[in-house]
Each structure stands twice: as structure tokens, then as C-alpha cells.
Length: 208
Ligand code: TMP
Image (cartoon, rainbow, N blue to C red; front, side, top):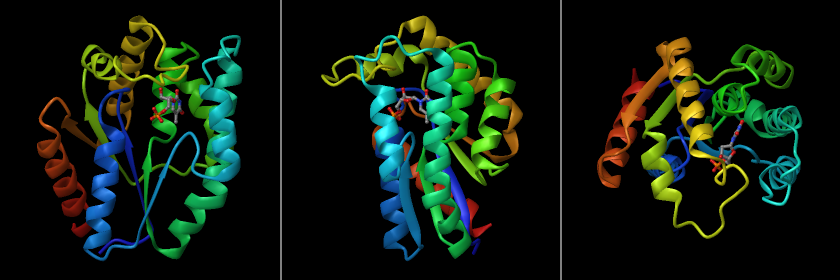
């Protein structure tokens, strides 16, 4: 069995990432795997404080580069405090979003450019990329429809359809660049089907 593994879940808003990644984490724990679950932005006390600033709907004046820097700052703190130590201990670290979210959202969504965002994040993560990424695939239209009824929409949930379409295009580029570690699942299927496929995909990869 592999040790010291970093697995991330990615997808557009409304892809069901959080539900699916938590389920996979619980099932792996039941099977005796040493799993740690976390999320970005956030995942440590300081990083969660930065998350609150980024996602606060009242921060409408936030510049797109400020936003990119804050995501990277939050990632740095999370990486140093939680991700790096867990991987060094030999645990399996499962994270709901990581640097690919910045490549898609800030690189494409905010039109800063994927290479600029990649460089910026290098300072935060010192070259560390996930070993495996599960991408939950839903079109921006379906994703947005799913989050439509949320009462507590954050600053990014409130973005335009055009923004979310650019994010989706960004993810397509991310999938092309990192195709070796990307596992794409059609997330328009029923929740139980997506859960089953995601768990199976991760288990098979871990035991390979
Ligand atoms: P969440 O809804 O998965 O908790 O993420 C919050 C929002 O932050 C979501 O709209 C995606 C966005 N995001 C970025 O724009 N860049 C990033 O690097 C990360 C981690 C999230």
C-alpha cells in the first residue's frame, strides 16, 4: 500500500465535491487507512481566517490579484501546518480543493493567466502537487442550478455564469496539463453512483 499520499478533489461549484470527498474519507477510515481530511481555502486556524476574508460577500472591492494572493497565502499556511507534516508521517491527506482551483478560478475565471497563477503558487507550495486528483465533472450550468437554492451564497457563488464558464474551461486546461494524475468522474449521475465510483477509483489507485 502507498504511504504519505496527497489526494485532492476538484470540480466546479455545485459538483458535489464536499459530499463525495467526505464520503471517501469516511470509507477509507473504516477500512483502516490513516486518513486526514481537510479543505481549501482554509484547513488551519489562520487559513480559515483568510478564507473568511476571501469569501465574505461584502468584500466586493477585492482586486483579483489580491484574491489570488490570499488564496496562495491561505494555501501556504495550510501546507506548512497540516499537509506537509501529515505526508511526512505517512498519512493519506485528502483535500477538498488545492492549487488546481486557483489555476481554474484565478487563472481562467479571473483571467490572470494559468502560468502566472502557477508561478505565484510555487512560492506557497514549493513544488508540491497532489499525487492523485479526482475531478467531479458537471457543466457550469448544472453546477449553478444546484447551488441556486443555497441561502448562504459566498462571494464566488455569486459570480456570473460567464465567470463560471471560464472556470470550467480552466479546468479543461488543468485536465490536459496533468492528465496522468487526473481521474474524471461524471458527477451528473446519482449521488450514490458518484460516491461508489469515487471510492472505487481511490481504493484501486491506493492499492496499485
Ligand atoms: P468551496 O465552495 O469549495 O468551499 O470553495 C470556495 C470558493 O473558492 C469556490 O467558489 C472556489 C473558490 N476557490 C478559488 O477561487 N480559488 C482557490 O484556490 C480555491 C481553493 C477556491
